[in-house]
Length: 254
Image (cartoon, rainbow, N blue to C red; front, side):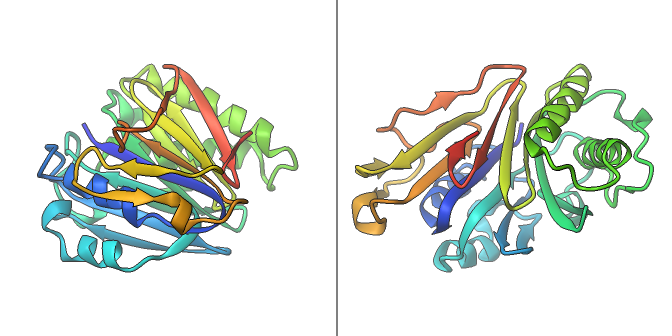
């Protein structure tokens, strides 16, 4: 299956360290060779980098590793295809507009009966179960909330109920963000860690790379990372319970 990567932070932060570990799983330490993508939020805008080539061989991935884009919300994905061909249009993350905001989504898993999902206003571009589920989810939100809801926590609780329905069709691990919040829904495997002062060293599990976060941060920084499997081998990651979700804003659990 695919692997997910997410970040929520209280200050613009680069994700080069964690992305370096994820890239290795795209053909070196893992079998996810059917493309990769990552989306960074910057204010109301977002920029996405995608490539249907394995991340370990991708020149675009090398660019992202070398270019420290700073963001407070990031969604990333490496793909092992099971529904839909290997192509750019089938490469996650997917982004659509809702309530004047860019919503970004990535999925890990496999669904059955997904072609019966009524996507209404939102039309899939590719032919994956993942993108169709995203379009269906947004259509349900558009119907229930014609305008942006004042209570976003209640809205994400509704998203979780939709994810519960999708989970009944198979495996549905998901990351979702509007640039302000980052939501992670777990069907089988998702982990998270929040880093704050006092910062220490972290060692990647998939590459011989160590970073001293004390030298890279300020005492006020709060950064939460989300990943399918822990990216470091010397830190305590928390596993999300199957069938539940976590929601972050500015790096803090909501």
